View 1 (cartoon, one colour):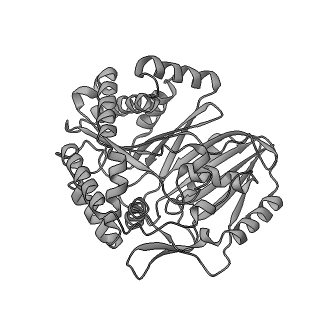
View 2 (cartoon, rainbow, N blue to C red):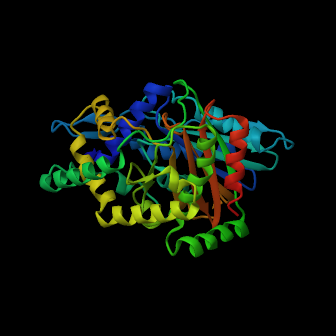
View 3 (cartoon, rainbow, N blue to C red):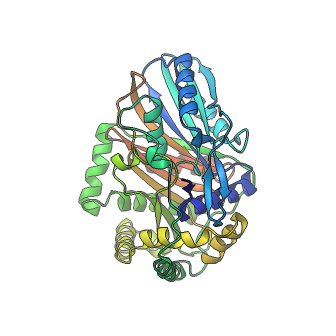
Amino acid sequence: MKRYLTGIDWIIHALDYSSRKKTGIGNTSQVVLELDGFLSEEVLNERLKIIACEFPIIFGYPSRAINLCPYWKNSHKQGELRLKLHRLSSGSDFNDLMRIFSEELNKPFSNQREHLLFNLIYQGKRSFLGMIFDHRLMEARGAEAFLGLLGGGRGLSLGGSLYEPSHLNNWLDKFRAGREVNRVFLNLTEGRPRALEPVPDGVGSEFKIINFNQERSSNITQDALSQAGYLMFMPYILSKSIMILHQIFEERKILPQDYLIPVSIDTRPNDLVRKEILFNHLSFFLFRITVQEADSFQLILSSVKEQMYNQIKVRLPQAIKEASFLMRIAPLPLINSILKIMSKGNTASFSFAFVGEGAYVSNSFMQIPVKNIFHLPRVPLPPGLGIFFNQYQGNLNAVFSYAHGLLSEDEIARVSLGINSLA
């Protein structure tokens, strides 16, 4: 049986194609384990060899079956999971660490069948393990689960990721979903959204990390509960992010169009993620906020909650998943054009995601305590700007990702300060 690509998979492939055209690098990201101890390079390399041998699917590539559906073709050659070693002095700081991770993430993979690359950094008595991953192969929560597999976690396998049917059925449902998605897109993409001036193609992404300890994370959670309500953490931190970036847009005196923010979502429980580690299982919300609303946190929050409620009511995330199957017949350049037509050529104001409590559930990696897990996503161009949150063991992490040259040092510092001031 083949592992056919879903419609969402094919959209991610189109985003990867667009990223390669603009930056020379695909749609990649990096997840980092902060370890409280020394991780042996030799032991890790041995484990990487075992994983590479057991799961050739991670070295596959897209192809088309005789029914014209795209599928993930297993590589017949033995692949290699590369590990790069870096050493920092005990006197180095977090900026030195981030410089290495950023430089490595802003490099392309060595060949078309490489989708994972590992960086091990020694800093004094601590180890940091970064895994750069191709979003065509896995998403953020899947990447965390894969690290669990690499670390020898129990109850983890790639079995649920190896096969997927062609979904060449229920065409009426897919066309109905397509009409619903088109209707929502027409309403939300009226006029060009507010966006920063673009930077030249080919620039890399840079990052600022804000780690909240247990107490500060709890304060943010409680504030979200009191102001936004139960299960409204994502609308709360999205609204805070809009307000923080709104100040930058206002000072740039950008024309007062509305903000347009896509938000990727994955509502699967961690147990299911751990059984379906590879490929993409997400969908999207799409929010539009007026400049007038952006002057008030309460107005932003009220609008985000109402839009999310309405999109859930019409089952927009499910409709996007279903309608996207219709796009698989088209080659990637055409898909890229179709996506631009659907959004009327508009780009987002910025990217946003909340990974939530991740799929890495252990408190150790190869018997070494894990202090933290955070993500470094390369932000698409455009918009070249994004704010992303994740949680590990109750601690919240925020990542401010931006294209080199898009913002001044003062603007970067003020956005970072705004995020840090959440608690």
